[in-house]
Amino acid sequence: MNDVLSIVVPCFNEQESIPLFFEAVERVRLQLPLTFEYIFVDDGSHDQTLAELRALASAHADVHYLSFSRNFGKEAALYAGLSHAHGDYVTVMDVDLQDPPELLVKMYQKIQAPEIDCVGTRRVTRTGEPKIRTFFAKLFYKIINRIGQTEMVDGARDFRLMTRPMLDAILELKEVNRFSKGLFTWVGFNMVYLEYENRERVAGTTSWSFWKLFAYSIDGIVNFSDAPLNIASFVGAFSCVASAIAMLIIIFRTIFYGDPTSGWPSLVCIFLFIGGIQLLCLGIIGKYIGKIFTETKKRPIYVVRETDQSKNK
Ligand code: UDP
Ligand code: MG
Image: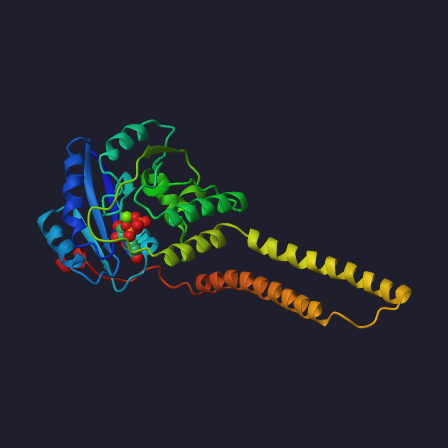
């Protein structure tokens, strides 16, 4: 019996890409000694994505799908797909063909080595992406790798081939605030990266606006680093010491030189400055408390409205 490869594919408004994706991956199947199992996750799409998936699943026995009751985000879709995977190996792929399916052959060859548990992919170029996005992406990786406890590889994609033990370890992490790039690294195991040139998506448009990505990167930092809290404490301590010194200087000056009351504008500036720092620090703490709040509610990570299994019943 062949080993089974589960292919997890999150889809959000991807009606045009799905048939193209399926066709491209099927072509690669011939080069691999593996049985395929597709798990498409419709992340609350508003277009014909679900209809496409239904049609695909009824035509091919190895295609399965889950459809969410609303848009829960790519991270939730990934988790849902991974928890429904039965394979000995599992891979995560974007449906827009930005993750080249032909790399699977090389990834499979690499993962045959007993010391390797995961073969990831890394974009070495970002052509076709707005310059400003590239700049901030690079900045994000610089910051997170300096202050975070978990290393994140610049350009690493979610597209990766994993062994079952590694997948099981990832599924053990049941946090609601998921940042997969970090989770994949956090579980450890031996990882190697294949490098490739960036590709543009085959159809449709990206669903990540600049602000969505910005919020996502803040999530990444808050989920994998407590450095912002340390910075807040440091800034607080620093302004405390600085104002103590300033106070001493003023007392000294008043006693020895008789200082008339002057300079209220500078005083107002200092008030505003300190007030600003306090609000900033409160904001940072608030971010972490917000995360704790969502974690303690223990709400499910996703809600399924329909799957091919439920339809067969
Ligand atoms: N996606 C998803 N839910 C979302 C947003 C995106 O499942 O809320 C899927 C999308 O269908 C695609 C993958 O995640 O398969 C990557 O999204 P996209 O191509 O828009 O991101 P980009 O490649 O531009 O980073
Ligand atoms: Mg894409």
